[in-house]
Image (cartoon, rainbow, N blue to C red):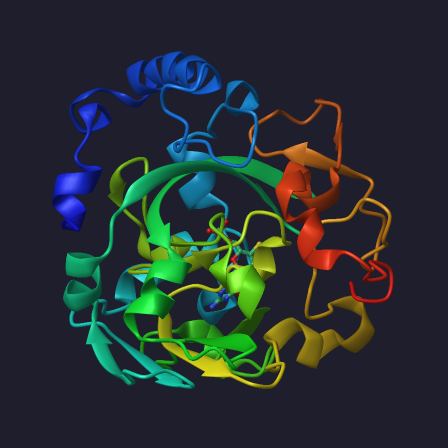
Length: 298
Ligand code: MTE
């Protein structure tokens, strides 16, 4: 148990990003050798070169601030994130309003370098800082008969210009099956590149589920509910069959357009798209879906 500052203050905080990127590659090599196994969990560390800060924070989807990719970076500064409280309720032994500071005091923040894949066919590699969602659910005493977890984003019309349009039903909501939520790859991100996560990326805490399309990774969470029933999700409410509850990255399912290839952000206008990988390359989650028809439960 340690606080966020202790855990996230690393060498990169005092080194320029380019030097940090070089060092990352060294660490990635070490990770492949097993010395730093946790930092790039779930993927071959040596393949992952993080995208630049400006790509990650300048090209965003956060419709509460507008639908253009640059809107969140322009408008999200208006979001008040202090104080911040997350209501944890439903099938938990310790329901309540947990302050951000309470949570951070009890969680262990670590770095996870993950691929991130949007349904719009762009992809990036992000050096997140965060903690495992399982640890937070256990802190709240999630009950054994709870089958799903529902999430809700803050809704503040006075701070969020995009919610005055009806492009989605507000607040933005998402959900996971309990075994997905408890999977060690599933994190609550609180930082990028060792800095507090910018508001446009979902400050102060957002979900990251690296084997699912990016819209499952709900931002600026204010409520987490353990429940018996599959919760509604914003995109499946809006576009029915196109965006299912599971939404695992799958090159073989059109969603609604072909998902066979993807383009890495920052790779340049003329760069070739690269092939999409099932579960975004995180093969270790395949067993969660054993026996499920991935075309049907998309
Ligand atoms: N969460 C909220 N509350 N509102 C949103 O519009 N967009 C989703 C997801 N989480 C979204 C959200 C989509 S479509 C994607 S691809 C990712 O956030 C983008 O995350 P990023 O902007 O940090 O790259």
